[in-house]
Length: 73
Image (cartoon, rainbow, N blue to C red; front, top):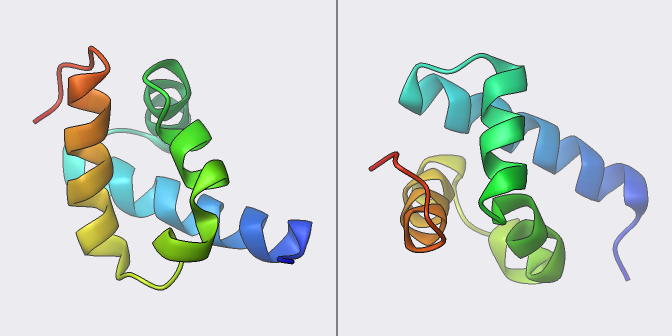
């Protein structure tokens, strides 16, 4: 339904925004999101997440990752 390119582009921008919100490099942000299942959540629910603002999703994914054991709040 969604192209790999569209999902990848959105996810890369999201990782950048998430990293900026938490003072992380792109690599640190991606590793955190991978470790605490944020990337999996985005992939599984892309149809919803890509319709939301990056800032709103950064807050939501932060909360989700926290529930999965992440320390960022």
